[in-house]
Image (cartoon, rainbow, N blue to C red):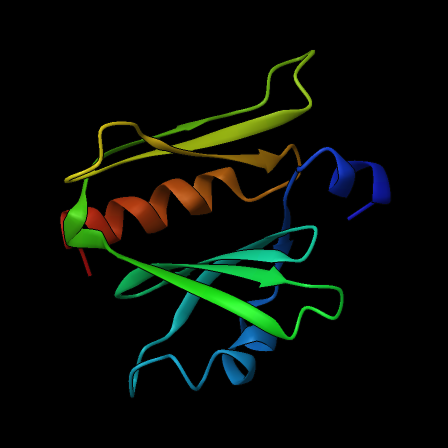
Length: 127
């Protein structure tokens, strides 16, 4: 990911195998990372059971906040691809109990179809 893309908040894909060991302390036994992308230092991780948002805080990034969204709480989702003049795509999640959708910009080169498929598998319970 280029510095400009990072500063603009755009995301880039991350190798799920590289994250498996890093997130092992919070993953359930047998839980697998299917897809992940990074925005500057923060991560959005799709596992086979849930969506995990990792907010790295502070100068060193050692302090982290983990937010876990079970797929069953996502009532609707959309993934918008980048257009000719758009710099980014966007993911929106409607979560039960929340009044506004959770929106996340994702980079032009991100795996938009993989994000769509991971959300569909999780939300629809398709395995």
